[in-house]
Length: 333
Ligand SMILES: NC(=O)c1ccc[n+]([C@@H]2O[C@H](COP(=O)([O-])OP(=O)(O)OC[C@H]3O[C@@H](n4cnc5c(N)ncnc54)[C@H](O)[C@@H]3O)[C@@H](O)[C@H]2O)c1
Image (tube, rainbow, N blue to C red; front, side, top):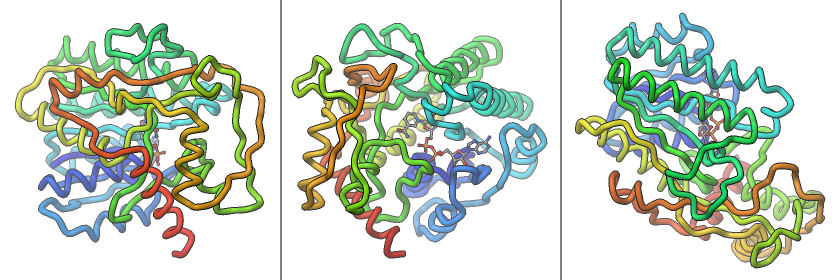
């Protein structure tokens, strides 16, 4: 049985779908602070080879909640998504991020060690690289986070590395770039409150004539002056988690991988794809660039291809289309 922390959230829920379809039984642990019971209920209705064996509402910061998982279920491996995710909020309230992302992970790891569970796939982020000095970013690029969110993720990576050396805790750390899109069958999708991600915000601006899209800076040294990011489809990302899990189950050593498409899109390019998909013009307001927004972040994904056999299959257009369909479905519901 696989424990998925943060399985009621955006990426975690898509990973649960992929796990069920691959025949894994799953236990979800989530506080529902930023996840949704509706998501858990939708996951429970999926008919696949694997089953949801349990949902525990609990907080990783509470050691008793964490131990209760392992005393109730026989867990074979863990996929750990649960964390706070806003860069901006982490700069205003770093302690909130260090407590949740660090202490939560420490509690989880210590319970795993006590129960003899030695396999974990960990959600890390491109934010561990900060403002990298080269693109595309491969895994040997120095890690130098520029905000407490990225720092908290880097610290957990370090703890996992140390626990592997000391206790044989085998781990795969997955550094995601910009995650986008929704489940192709619209069983789950992206819901963040507040939403800070580009594509859902563009869709919201397109669908609501009152909303203007804020474009932060158009004087970057890029092909059209706007920031370039690597948008990886959430179903492709979910598949990477299944591959990482199988890699560990097959005895693979601890490792870390960048998960992106190796292809960047500028804000203006994403905007154009959204306008074309939705068939509407998006009202845009040009704003000052945000402090600490790196010009270009694009992954080099060769290592994930070579070792995990992972190749993203879906395009930016696929991500925008499913995100838009999800947005429409949620509004109708
Ligand atoms: N969304 C992205 O583009 C992106 C990019 C890079 C990395 N990540 C990482 O992926 C992971 C998932 O991100 P997401 O976008 O799905 O976020 P999300 O907020 O949708 O999901 C996180 C889930 O974790 C739960 N959670 C948070 N703290 C918890 C705690 N202490 N105890 C129990 N549950 C808790 C929340 O309720 C939520 O359901 C995070 O670790 C994040 O750092 C996300």
